[in-house]
Image (cartoon, rainbow, N blue to C red; front, side, top):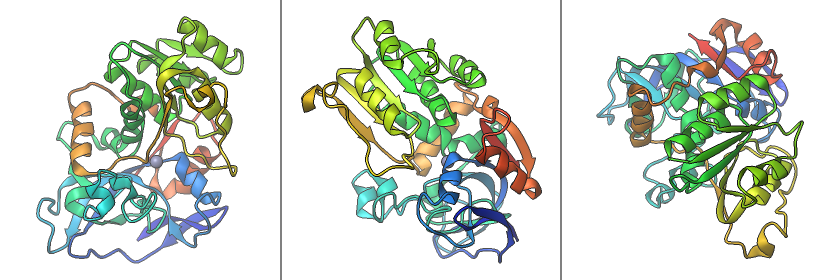
Length: 349
Ligand SMILES: [Zn+2]
């Protein structure tokens, strides 16, 4: 079968591989649609260390082609969403409510990390009954695929942010995950959502997903402007959706005492992330810093799909580019180099 791989740090390309086989609890899925993620670029750049001929990709939907002997819920022919994060549900971390950390820190992140990812004609899913969800008939593939990571991670930012109904929220960066955090903040009942970004098409989408105010960090000071918009108080919740030291520091500064800094960015560079001491209340301002990795699991995916089925949200306007799988190299270049105002690149199979 055809796959798209990271050959080594900094190099990608197409590669033929044998079709995967299922163990007793596993499934094999025939890929129908996938999305390229910024994490794929981080991986190719060496963010998780060296890899050889690793199939990339972790956001996909497909049709079950084969299941192992112990799989009971999922059947061949089912149209399914597969979580980007596929935890081992028997692991104590999962039993403790932290399934994404099963098997060690970030251990639920297997696709394109510790095993081949989803950019292939077929891929393997561990713990199939727990890590896939059947897609409702009226939710198309190109919409459902956003639940694998973008909705799950973005909404997690709002969930971990402990947003009071009517509370104030700033979402720092309006990439696809930030946009879904903005949508999540609105769904969680925020009274004021401030979106921070400089790119016009991202600003426009942020407004459509619920941002009441837009702050452009290239033309105004984000801390000053957020303070002004919140009557000098700061926000209840700041969601860091970029993964940069400076943005994290801004998030701490603009969060009011007692508020929450919810981190959903991928911090791919540098040895340390710095906490601004004074605005942190010299360690005593009751500011909570929450972190997490995209939650997985069938229960959560069923909920995310319901949000789409009942039309609370349409993520498809984030799809700025679509390529067939045989043009994967060009597709990756567009996403990786952020060409042509790209937000999200959809791959069809
Ligand atoms: Zn992703």
